[in-house]
Amino acid sequence: MKNINEIRADFPILSRKVNNDMPLVYFDNGATTQKPKCVIDTVSEVYATYNANIHRGVHFLSDMSSEAYENAREKIRSFINAGKKEEVVFTSGTTGSINGLAFSFGERFIKPGDEIIISYLEHHANIVPWQMMCERKGAILRVIPINDAGEIIMAEYLRMLSPKTRLVSVTQVSNVLGTVLPLNEIIAAAHSVNVPVLVDGAQGIQHGIVDVKAMDCDFYVFSGHKIYGPAGIGVLYGKENLLSELPPFQGGGDMVEKVTFEKTTYNVLPFKFEAGTMNYPGAIGLMSALDYISSLGREEIAERENELLSYATERLSAIEGLKIYGNATRKISLISFLLKGIHQYDAGMILDKLGIAVRTGTHCAQPVMDRYGISGTIRASICFYNTKEEIDILTSGIEKVKQMLE
Ligand code: PLP
Image (tube, protein in one colour):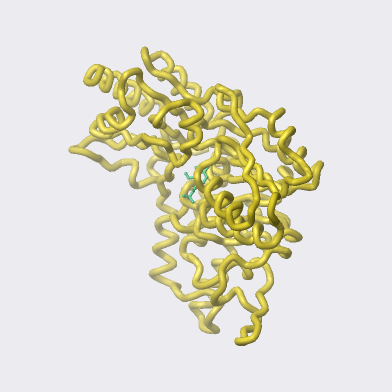
């Protein structure tokens, strides 16, 4: 792996100053990651040298952009170890993928009284689309509870699985608590009663190796911007037999085979799900991000992030009055915490003045807050380009917050 100075030099934004000359300390990687120069250059190159709409023209530039877009699909296929390119659908992001799937799955498979299982740890993106679908179809949403450490209670999940269950949709990693869910057990139990599983990989794919074949999930979704790629591009992976059975979730150009006013027939996979002009510069930029990640080494990234998590946990735990939420046995590099007697927004604003970017609030996961009886947390989400020195700056920043507000 490159050394940390070389890695940081790959990310132009990391050397900028914020708030009256404070060096930027960026700990909001869970919300979005920064982009390496190769990604920025790739997107810029698309627009500067071969911009043209994909799958539309017979001209030189259109061929070039179509080829690059399809190369990006192949790159994603191999990155997540999907069996076929046809199983990789481009979307606008995790939210777009889940909404699309919830619509199509609902139309094809759900009738009144059917049940969908999610967990207490879900981001709103993996709650609301299912609620909307349940409302439309008269189905019921069941929720796996969590323990105080922030781990799902497997026995409750196993009890919940029933002949009425049509789908299990769970996150790979909690965006609030960092909990890594036991996906192998969750998926095996669902499959033993022939129920498919959707995995929300928005917070998982950037922290280690994802192999959809080994995991045996039926659907896997993620966002490009959380794995060092551009915003506005995401992926919906689905097993071919399931995707083939689902109706499209949007109609328009490119997703059709033949259109008449009487009847329209649909394109083959994956194009059936890609209506209208897709974000091809985003897809091509995402390919560049995945190349970058692979060049650093995904195992090496996970190792470095684990080391940073241990260090941050040790430093933050030593601060009096600081309480960490989420102590799961398996956790990614993210720490949610509160300071006794101090509102999270006040703390976040002072940290910001010191150049430290953290996220404050509910993190789009209101039920997790309700579970702990709190209104929000301060979240420091760490990634491989962060350093122990930055964790020290966060630690002294928190001490300063306490001095000012306690
Ligand atoms: N799921 C999880 C676990 C997330 O953390 C997020 C974003 O933070 C999302 C879904 C939604 O992702 P996006 O806003 O990129 O669609």
